Image (tube, rainbow, N blue to C red; front, side, top):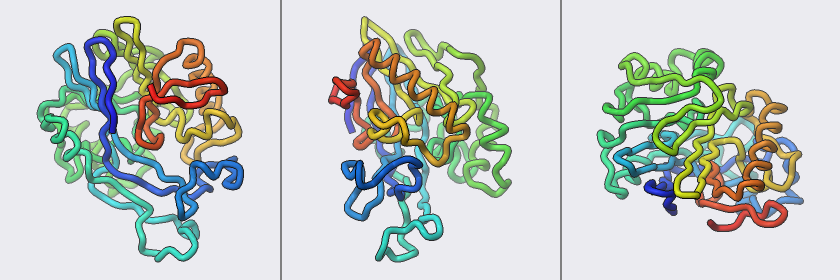
Length: 277
């Protein structure tokens, strides 16, 4: 995992795990046309992780991974020849990645959730006990009812979210632009979920956008037909994606989508070709 500096902030990518998504998770993806995103078994390898933002006296964790668990392939979607009990993937590595970066859970002052899907909230309270006891947990207000309220009461992601909420740690944000710290702004980017936010970090003439799930795969940089199965509103998600791609091209910002291979920091070259920042 890499890191980048923006003004007085250092931003580091942290891995929690990996999932292998079958191509049907990406409606509009032609596997024959985009073989570059496929692994040897024909699935799309997708990292699951988080970003650590440090500087100016602050320690901010952006997203909280999948947590210490695995997930299976949906019925009928396992690659040919795969044992049905083989997991599609999972998490479990985030706390070790934080420790390697020299950060204890109690050092984290803010956990900013780009949205409330399970692969972004897994370490909040994996046993129903808040893991980041001193942190405020910031999320888009518009996500709670449609993303959490629809889950069964035994769902582990709902248990974790309700645990940090009951502990008084959550802070729901509204609006198109919410300041989290000097030079760090949460910007509303709905579609994937109603309360999805992008983290916009600007300092000393530099700019980094932590895009969350606005974009899921490099194919979406060049092929507007490709979407994602979990988009709450696919049409709005597509409009949001194009709006942000236009802004990225116009401003030359560095980007870090949540699930690109290697969770790299990138710039867009000609034809929206991703280039290392």
